Length: 404
Image 1 (tube, rainbow, N blue to C red):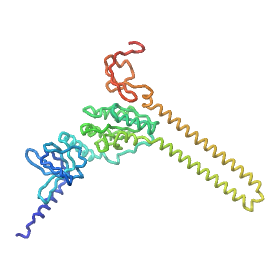
Image 2: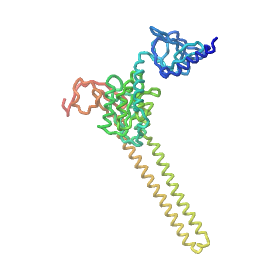
Image 3: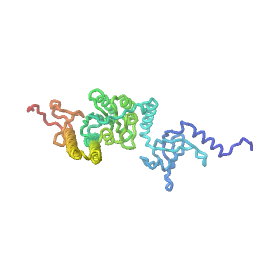
Image 4: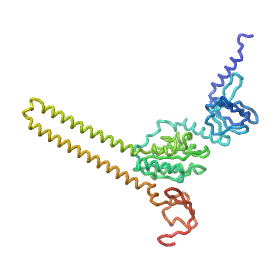
């Protein structure tokens, strides 16, 4: 045996280190058909083979990775697996250590979203240095989303309940399909130029990767980053991340969460104001109390015993002044609180939800609000939005100024 001969273990370790040290093998996406699938009962690990017309690849997906899988792998299923290539020394073979499995039908979308994300990240579009803080007390918030979806209702309801002083302006956008990208970009341009707001919320409810695809495009990401107004991205649910999320100034897990981030809680503000006023009152009372104590101490000293009558008068005057100051302070506090509550109630009465709850409604034709009856003709299909839903209707007749 030659002195420079390697053992099988040594050679296998060299091969393993070589493969593990290759950056392009640390994160790969491989498509193929599942065969020999085995979900081990005791360990929970998944073992299977990924194959195509020309080759086969052994795969393992540990329980910690597969416990949250969105699909149930089966033999014959065409999938896209992501993970890393390494060597299993005991068998002396390389295999794919799988992190995620998705159906091959959406594999192209997944790969494209990853390509866009990496490209924009390399360009610095997601840099933390570009992120801007949200205004603490916004007067207007622009919302870019579907006007009939649950997302817009959640945002309006939460924002109105937390901070009635803020006006919510909705730009009705298409949030999925081939026209979605254009309307999302148009919405950002609208709030930056035509209707100036303090904060923009762009998003939709959760969905499949196909539904969220418009939010994974370069054009939308560039438009979000180019906005002169801070943008909150509220796309999908907790586990859904899109390119738009990375490009925005702030990422919200849901539309409801976006509304909470965009406006302060008026009740918390009121409580803080009450607390500050209470502290101020106690400080003033302490000053008065300390002053009285100083006067009483001086009055009891031998040097002032001959002036006892004068000191008594001064003490009575100080009591009168302190009582008057306390009364005036209470009046000021009550007045300020009443003004605050009156303003909050006035602003709350102008909320879009309040208007709808009083029996009013608004009409849309082809997704565009209509306020002029001459813009509607017999046979048109319209949507009538009321307090608790939307009614689809067909126009039977139109009357203008009392005329048919």
